[in-house]
Length: 174
Length: 110
Image (cartoon, rainbow over all chains, first blue to last red; front, side):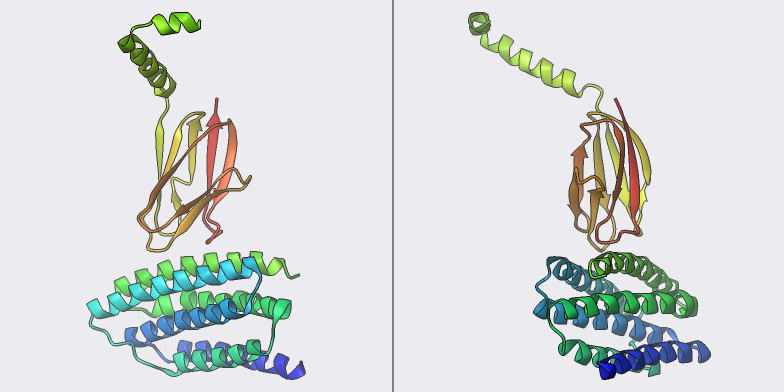
């Protein structure tokens, strides 16, 4: 249990430091697009893991909403990068996001039943807080192209909705 | 009553039915609300009992229009238009179940 708690903290630290590094060195649009796309993919994978493991109706419905919305956002992002002829570029922030998410998935894989449900939903609350903060303070202000900025702004509103939705589901497990 | 109804000519009976339908919808309005950029616009509307509220979702993600009192829960996929007829007076608070940061209010008078 102590180990699980420690890896959770480590993952949170990785996320936080990843975003903090991004604030120091200026990101270009190709890197911003890669971070946003990666952040979406991570939440889709988390939802897919939940759909395999959960038996709770509300958690299942939430996970299905996450797959649908994040897939829709990523389709828009891919269409936009294609239109702008921008190739999303991997960077230290998107790498640390992926590493943190892989650790979290491994941690959640060991849980089942209500313990899994609670851990998944709590992580969704924390994850959307981190991503919303990164969008608001780093990615949206850093984007140069106005269409990319607009899509990230719409994405932020969608994810702020997800945060509230996740908080409602999390309240069930309090 | 039954006999007199039977004695009405066929055309007359049809006209009577049309008249009732027309009278029932004479003052009813259709109030349109657009969903765009994760917001109901307008977020507040006034209506009368019998009016129809019609939502159109212009976003690329699905939304719902869900009454907080549970009276209705309308699913709105991207580009969909769906409606509800207001049956009782009062203030209806509603929101999107998928994105609870989206809220709206309908004030229904008699």
